[in-house]
Image (tube, rainbow, N blue to C red; front, side, top):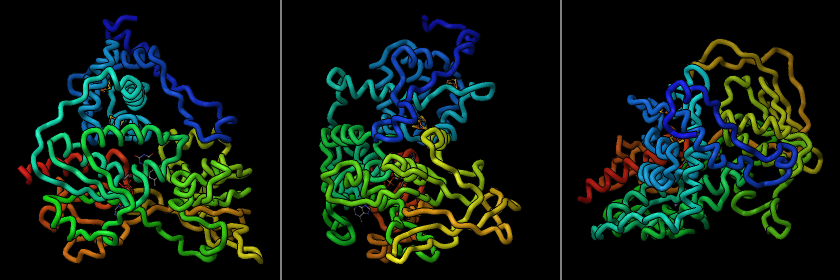
Amino acid sequence: MSNNLSPKERLAIGRAIMPAQDPEARSRNFSEVNLGLSLEQAVREARRCLDCKSRPCVGGCPVNVSIPEFVTALAEEDLPRAAAILRGDNALPAVCGRVCPQESQCEARCVRGARGESVAIGNLERFVADWAMAHADTLPEPPRPPASGKEVAVVGCGPAGLTAAGELARKGHAVTIFEALHDTGGVLRYGIPEFRLPKEIIDVEVSRLTGQGVEIECNVVIGKTLTLQQLREDFDAVFIGNGAGLPTMLGIGGENLKGVYAANEYLTRINLMGAGQSPDCPTPVIRGRRVAVIGAGNTAMDCVRTARRLGAERAMIVYRRSEAEMPARIEEIHHAKEEGVEFVMLTSPLEILGDDGGWAAALRCQKMQLGEPDDSGRRRPVPVAGEVFDLEADVVVNALGTRANPLLTATVPELELNSWGNIEAQEGGATSIPGVFAGGDIVRGGATVILAMGDGKRAAEAIHARLS
Ligand code: FAD
Ligand code: SF4
Ligand code: SF4
């Protein structure tokens, strides 16, 4: 099929279906679920794009990826051009193509979605990014800019920090990232499981940065190992992208029983430390025969699908609202269902019940119903009188969300925070301290990868303007 198609011919092409591992097989392994489009599928999908002059899809992307341009290059089978356009706009395209909530961002604005299915922008982004990784030796490296003589410290090696570092290095500044953990990537590595985002992709993206001269120092906790004041003295500017990794507690009885985890701890043990995946791993994790995960966001889906892979006979999502209000990406919910995850909806936990040995045994629950909308516009869950029941569970995972960790911020009284403990930052990331910028979850609270990256990109521009 040539690319000289009429709009009618383009409209006649149906959306490509992403090939995936068989649900039964994948619910027992940690390999990536989505297998990626073939070249033929990707080119055909790209030819569904109408190359709209008004480019509405671009406005739906927080970093304004030049979508029609890279998709048209792919439709013309010019992959080096597609890759160059994409990588010019997005520092982590292989990550975003996999984990962005496209259905509420770029794809939500695609005109093709108004009367059918939007162009699969995320899947095409993943295809081009993976192609570029596989053909890295044949693609020209961007020229190294002359050194500016300025040095910038970045706190945190998640998507916000990585993006800020990459953009600053591209402008000639010497960048050092300080990361508290022993490895890079932030939530991309310790939170999002291998079956959604293979660690190899993070390794390649990080090595591209270090290839541009970015230094990374792991095992350095700013606020403990070094202070922010020391960074201010040693560097010309500082970007804080230390995320929001502190769990919100359930505040119910039984939270200290054995077998009860906060989602970040549960996922970190498995994703970062290898618990459960390797028999030689010194880090333990309780596998659980019946696992109840409280919450319904991406984190909850990652926990419950992980529990299933660790052998849970019943892996359950317990959520106080209904399926329509679940905040997780549609694809994750769909995949979880295919893998046999149970959804216990309109159910709120009251207490975790333990056995005589201090182990979790059941979750006491209250049945809910939806009432009037609350401040968020979503219908408020209200208890159904007298409907209390127990759900057998030997592992309970709290995936209610996370907050800003005060480890760094509490050591700097002059850094302005909001009532949630997040750093107050202006557009461009400037904080109340001159020369100190911030972005990502530490400013927004738990948000998305691409929003964190957008903050990193804008802060890098503001830092560059200040240093110039
Ligand atoms: P982080 O990714 O949290 O990185 C912050 C880094 O700073 C960490 O490496 C941390 O160790 C380090 N750090 C913390 N304190 C210090 C310190 N004092 N000194 C030095 N280093 C420090 N978003 C999506 O768009 N799609 C998804 O599918 C998705 N799934 C998710 C699944 C899970 C399980 C979780 C937890 C989140 C998910 N998110 C998803 C949200 C997304 O991952 C975050 O919004 C994003 O990672 C925020 O990026 P960040 O760089 O601000 O922070
Ligand atoms: Fe869409 Fe995310 Fe890519 Fe932007 S970065 S075009 S929102 S998939
Ligand atoms: Fe292509 Fe959809 Fe963007 Fe139009 S809105 S340019 S059809 S991706």
